Length: 250
Image 1 (cartoon, rainbow, N blue to C red):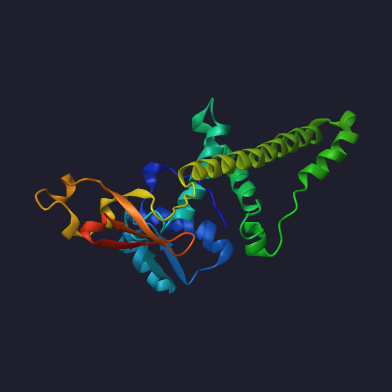
Image 2: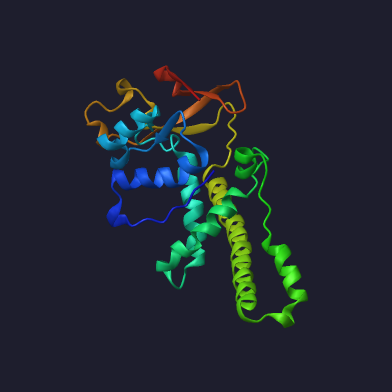
């Protein structure tokens, strides 16, 4: 599940993060067996590590400079930012007012891969929003909105509208993320005889330009001829037949 917690950047010490953890995660889900986080200084702080040790929680860090390690968290952060940005175009400082709606919308959104919402995976059921039902009943008694009753109706109407808006913005943010990914990761099919280029990072140092330091070497080498294809997504390529070099590229 996703938890969106507004916090003051000026007071974001390890102790503050620990308090937020207890108030949001531990209070609702209990202590996990293991916490995997990025290498933020707060999670490497002695206070945080010792606190987790006392609770019997194993602390692990993601691999540095490897986006795949925390890709899910980064993707969720981008979706949250896109949603909040669309909410606060005219008043960016009010983003914390919409954190609740953003959190609920994400946790109530069905995942295309699992087929379930985070609520369903965590709690076994998605919570029912009573606001839409309330508004239908409220419209039948619109002429009797006086005092606190009228204020409650207005508040519920505004909150329900914001929640529906959050869901629509979530769908828009997810669609943008999906379209951007598809544009950058178009599946390419190669055939025997095709000429391609190999990025230098996939080559051994023996094949690099020895006269130059690695940073100044060519970033791409080629052309490379595909000599054999044995799976739809795996190709075996060789650099100019006369040189006799071969690679298996996964």
